[in-house]
Length: 150
Image: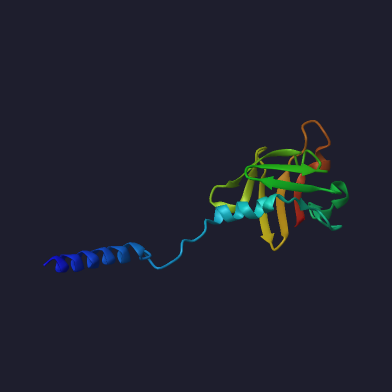
């Protein structure tokens, strides 16, 4: 009688362990697209750099010479730039993904930037307003930055 209880107990424990080890649904957990997008933008802490002669367009015209040596480094929630025109790109600031659209980031100054990452190339498209009381026409417009991972 004792051996029968022992066998039943072993069967019950084995069954319980088998049930607990089963995957619910048979599919692996899918990675969060927003988390993946942030990781791509953060780029392991490496800067995104304007490298070609046509890396920066403003209203469809090449203005790369105004952003010579430009780079931007994203970290989670903040960014830093070098060699930027401050009314188009602040030296540093905050950013976040725009709600459900993981391909748009919102800078802390309210500028919405469309993003596209293909391989080691990041394309940012946004509209910048001009400075108050300044050379509005010289900086205001739609910008497109094509940046390469450093």
